[in-house]
Amino acid sequence: MQVLFVRHGETDYDVVASRGVRGWATSFAPLSHLGRLQIDVIARDFRLREAEAILCSSYARALESGALLSRALNKPLFVEYDLHEWLPQKDSLGEIDAALLRRARSDLARPGDDAPWERLEEVRDRVLRVLERYRDHHRVVVVTHAVVIQSVVGTRRPIEHAEIVEFEWDGVAAREDARVASLPTPVER
Image (cartoon, rainbow, N blue to C red; front, side, top):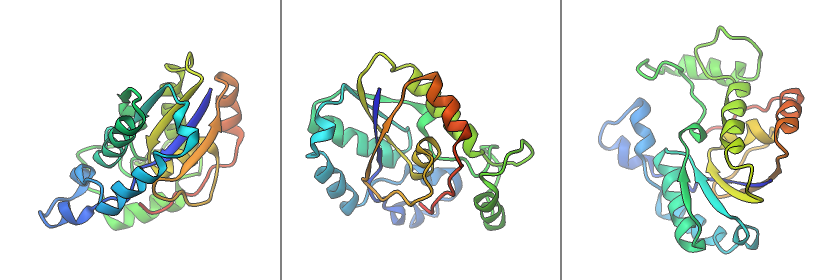
């Protein structure tokens, strides 16, 4: 199956920051005007036209990006919880402090189960489980987040807003290959 990963458009965090929103609630931030334009531009990309479906994260920035693509391409949209952003704190009620976030970003790729954050291998595994449910499709668009894309395709380079990253997935074999691939370093939002 060909997977066309799309990173969401630029996000307007000022909307939530101006209301004093912190932590997990910042995931409700919508796209900025530029973010909407970025998605409108890539909606014209010929590679997206042949997709059978659009899958997206439930975070507002990805959901809005996916909805704009769905409307422009006239493709069905499926919201998949497990396409969400990397979790810097597995405890959804826990506070995320700056020191924990810095530590998580530097240790993210190291193997081990004792960290309070989600490891890249865990991110990759949950995304591949989602793709498994769509294996009867030939091509899907997956609107998600930079670290999620990096964890699956095995790249260290930054993923830009509204960038399309092509990935060929052949099921279980790709999952095994992905575990062996070097783990990428995450980028800032």
